[in-house]
Length: 526
Image (cartoon, rainbow, N blue to C red; front, side):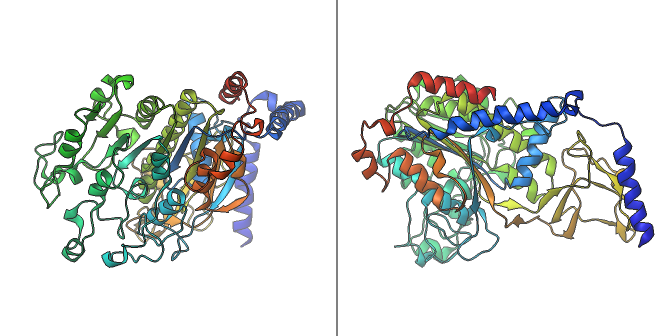
């Protein structure tokens, strides 16, 4: 025991004696005091709350983006720019208001993405595996659907005359986006080809079909999921020789064709690749359907830049189309593959997905104003992802801890998972990570418990907000509170009385456009 303690102490002493990797200016106490005073000065400006009516509302959802992921993505972003990383600011870090969200499902302590999506989109907590239905609905039991449907903030916005959009890096009929428009007791019923015969005979509809039928004329839809839209065995337009990408529908419907036919006189466009997307003039587009892959979009690190748009590019086009509506818009943006990277134990993929979503947040900020746009960034749940090990300032976020284990005398990476596919024994002991390329894109970070897929985490997640009524997202809140705040700010759904009573009131419109512009510039520069 004493030997182990001395070993650890020696490692820490050695680390402390190493040359500090930080700027010389940080040695001066005035550096930190002046920084704090600037922050305080900015904080004091927040005493004049923005109580404007939100013309536009945007929700950025980082699927699986727990607080450790946010922190690690911040460091990665800085290191990608040649900095040590810890002092870097993500765009979401600049938002003035931060809260915590309690993510449990009605029947689950550690939630899934379907029940959570129902909470932050429909304002009602639900059972895991179900979308757009209350907790009275039972997963996979079709006959519990009817009468238990709950509507989403996307529908509230559409009913109020706003334009609405969905942008995701997953399939457009995946758990997160589907809760915006579907009412389904099983998140896996992507097409009718994925449904049991009994459910079809009982009248339940697959999620892809509900995308086009439940809320007519969703203005912008972008993501993956082509194979759920076409009849079974229909070759994919991009991968015609690969049968695994063929259509899956049993009912013979060509949902893309039906959508295209309905848009002939409505300035509606269907695109399936980046080139065609970026060739569009948003001023001439009122409706857009973009399906860029048969399933989910590829990871950002593996994206084919000729055929697949980035999340930032999709958000750019979406906002330019939606903002033409003088009544404003609602936009749901999902960085969905953060979650997939973590499930696969591929931390590098997950963190680069988070950085890309932050770029998209930056782009959205440039295209909108905090004067009339409420922007919220949050996650549905966390993961059992962590990083630690007394790493020094500027240590690569994907690098080794500056010590070896005092139990097996082997090195370990700073990033680890509580469970997942990274568990590996070599000759009965933990693999020596110094013998493998732990910096490669698809390296499986070591995990404590072997699982084929890493699991979600159950801790609270952050809510970042800016714009009208952003201050209402404060403290520790239930996840289903989020859409109620967004609706209140925008005067949609059930939250309208205060808008009629205060129409034209200085309390709701006290910030001038000029000041709004200056505030927007401030947030970009801070």
